[in-house]
Length: 328
Image 1 (cartoon, rainbow, N blue to C red):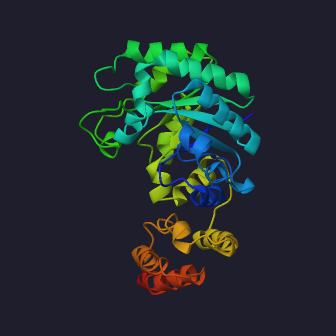
Image 2: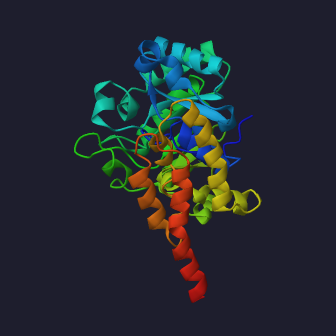
C-alpha cells in the first residue's frame, strides 16, 4: 500500500530521474512522479530511456499522457514491467502542444473516454491507475461538471484522484499563467472527498508551508507539492522533520550524498549540468545562496565539468556564511 500523504508533482522538464534522486534524499516518505511521458514516446521512441530510474527513487509513479485506451493499456504494462508502483493519467496539462494531441486538461470534457482508458489499463495491470485533473476547464467549471467527471471515471475503477485545485483556461493563458491566474478553490477538492468518501483524494496547487499541509490532511488523504519542491527543495526536508518526525537534515550532508550520485552518473556519460540544474535551489534563502546558484550556473555547463564544481560552489558561499556568524 502506497502512502499518499505526501507526494511531489509531475513537472515537465523538471522531475527527471536526477531531480527525483535529490528529492528522495530529502524526503523518505514522498511518493515521487515522473514528468509526463506520452504514449507515442513509449510506443515509438526510446522506451528504456523514458522509463529509466534508480531503485532508490521508489516509491515511484509514471505519469502518462494519452487518450487512446489500447495504447494507454500497453504503456501501463510497460510501467508495471519496469517496476513502477502506479500509473497516473494526465488530465490536467493545459499546454497547446498537449491539447493538439488530444490529451491533458482537454480530456475533462470527455469523461467517458478517460473512463475507458482507466478500464482498459486496469485490465492489463495490477498496480493502481490514478488520475490527476483540474477542477474544470474554461466555462465548464461547475460543481456538477466536476462531480460528473469523478463519478464517471471512478465507476471505471479509478480509486485515486489528484485534484489540482484550479480550473484550466485552455484558450488565452499560457501553461505558466494557468498555474497562477485561475484562483485556487480547495473547497472543490474537499467536496469530492465528501461526496465520494470511498475514494482517495489528494490536493495539488499553491502549497508552500507545512501549516498548509496540516490543514489539508484534516480533510483529504494527501497533499502534492509542486513548484515549491523544485525551487526550494529543502522544503521537503522540513516537512519530513515536522510532520513525519524525521531527524533534521543538513544541506551540506545532502549535497555530499548527491555528489556520490553525480560521480556515478558522470561515468555513464551524463553531463554535469543535467544534474546540477535541479540542485540550484538547495541553499535558497541561505547566506550566500545566490553565489552558490551563480557559480553552478556559470561553471557546470563547461565540457568535462566534474563534481568538483559542486564543492567549489560550496566554497563560494563560505565567506558569506562566515560574515553572518560574525555579525551575530
